[in-house]
Image (cartoon, rainbow, N blue to C red; front, side, top):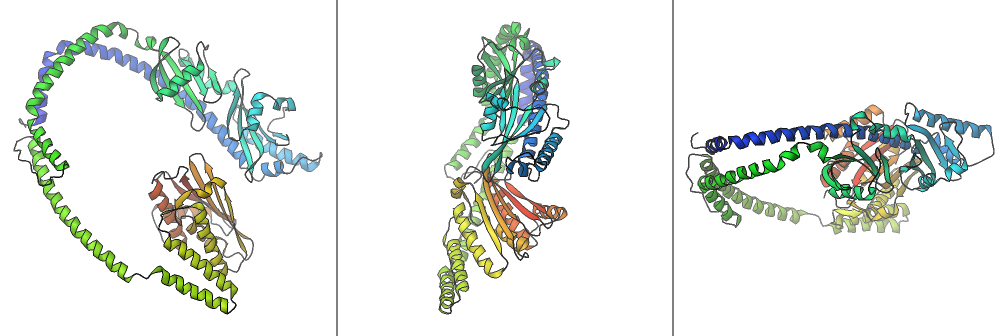
Length: 571
């Protein structure tokens, strides 16, 4: 133990500590002041974070409410798509149903003043009975909210009017806008707490400017926001408006909003500033002494370490025959022995790798020698197609042609990634073949954003999902079977939904299916296809991507896949 590096460092530390007792006392005093400052920072940070969390929670609830309205299929969509007509009892009932639905969404949410659905022909459905006039819709903030193609917050800080706007889509077109009118005072009340009275709070929107502040704005809000954005850190010191501030910032999830809290540094530091110059001098002396001692003693202690490092450098240049000849009764000596043992093992492993590579090449040659050439399959299918043509079997001829095209595409295309358009061709050929097997009338529908046809994805990723929808979903239906493939962008993801109107599954069965896939249980055909697809997605793109299943007994099944919007991400 006396020869260990740990013991030597301990002796050195004790010697330095004895010689710098006075310095340590002064530094301890400074540390105490700094601890008070840090405690104050932490205390204020927690209160601002708590207020920001409350504010963000309200915005999250607003987003959920807007999503509930935009996706409601039984009450909202029939009402807004029915069209304007003269007063009738049916029209009254539709409005009443929508109003009741919107009122229920506002329940116990005091920060929501009204929930409205405004159609393109300016029909208004709303939760409360307050009359909304046409001139109200002409206000600038209302016009911005109604004309947007994205969901988000729109506000007029001077008028203290805040709206959350969410377009309602039908067939890719905007048919109405869901507007949620928010109570500005209720939203910003989260920041109006007694512990925050000494802190300047600013809430910015990156596009619309300042949303809220609890103080009089004496400088340029754009300059302040630019400084915070440039720093890019949650906690940082900034120079603004002629003073130095301790800045705290939070970004609000999917909203383009940032909360900034500013605390004057003179409030945080107080008496620490008076001691700074004295302690800097003492600290400089202590550093010089520590450096001098470290340089001298490390040179004495690290000779063997330098020699061991030199041996490792030789290995890095390619000399695998080097061995260490250090013999010392301390940790460096132990490292030297371990180094030599490791090099001996590496030498043995390299020899084993060479042997395995030789065996692998022999095995590959053996497999290639016995492999059936793909053109043999093409010729066989072409023969079937020719005989079917000669005998007038048109359906068999077309099925054989589709099978030949499918095999040719899959076997000759060596690319691991293909475009969505190529994947669609594989699936269309597969469906054509399956129509020969299943005599029931079924349809395959594609609803894909135009720019996504060139999106590249792993080959045959979607075909097993479509196959499952056909075999396990609609194969038993005599007529009316539909498989819909819907693909679109959503934030940083590409969402793929394969839906069928087949027999569906119970909630319990869906849970069992997902649990089995989670345990990598691949028993059963349906589970094999879905498990393989989800595992491929995770292997190629990472664990944050994957998919899930939604289903309802005797109604539908939907397999939803989540892929990265940026091609190549995770690869």
